[in-house]
Length: 397
Image 1 (cartoon, helix red, strand yellow):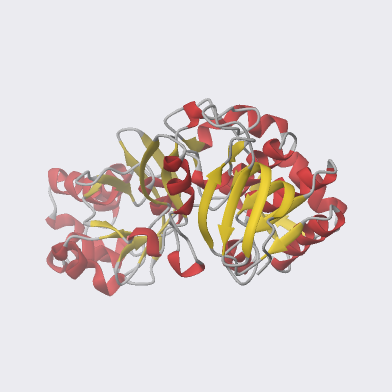
Image 2 (spheres, rainbow, N blue to C red):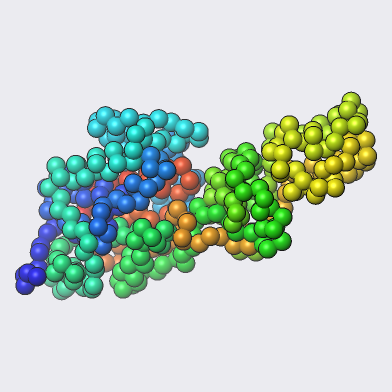
């Protein structure tokens, strides 16, 4: 272990999306840059994202796609390094990609293409990576330099960037380090919570819906503040799928969500017209043309599903439509950080520069990516925040 600290202009803790982007930009400016990460490989979350295809950004990006106690904070970074800037970078490396629903961009081949691009850019910018490097202590000296004690010796730099991510997916090495550093230097941390995460169900709902595991339905899911229209997926633990993950970031414990399983239909009118023309048809037969067959008895009860239409009053048909289009469900909770894609909350944006990501409390200290109180929707938004915030810091560190 060297007795003298390894010195550089810039030290970045975290070799994920934000940290690598920051390192590239700092290195391009001729700044000697070192990236430290406790993992054995850089960019592990990049590799696993999007089912291994990396949903690296979205064509539709605005501040409205992000959650923060300061909703305006993300605007500067997102405009200074936009999705189009990152797409241009991907194009320059001839990485094949395609667009899916709602503007989501995915690699055609593999998430490795994005990681290889970032690592190659780091190499060109003469960035040094130290992997399997555990942070043990951080201090700032009177001369303005930060000193980081690690399992690989001492490092020293004038600029320190925290890009260590949040608490989501602990099996990928998530840790609270970034929040601990922020608190050490006097920053306020907004309480953290799992975001973009499946719901668990109350025991009675879990029992009733257990047999539906694997069924996906295009739905509109809402609470009094926001609504999302995408698939929901029934699982053996509860509810998942894009619409559920999206609403989970806006859910408060104890709150019910409303699920419309047929969002583009006037179901009451359809049931009444079918009653007039096909009075002997069973409810389950008619509804099986609109919804997965197993879903109807599970939600309405087997007895109701077996009823012929002529046996139902108009009031009952209205109640059936309401059950399927205004299904009130109170989740038991979420699956937590284990399966969450992101972490809500984090370092208070009011204590950072929106242009540079530098701390307003400590010169030379920067926070980027997921550790900051900016959380994107599902669909490439969190990667774009990583690219944008990392790029901004990289211009000035």
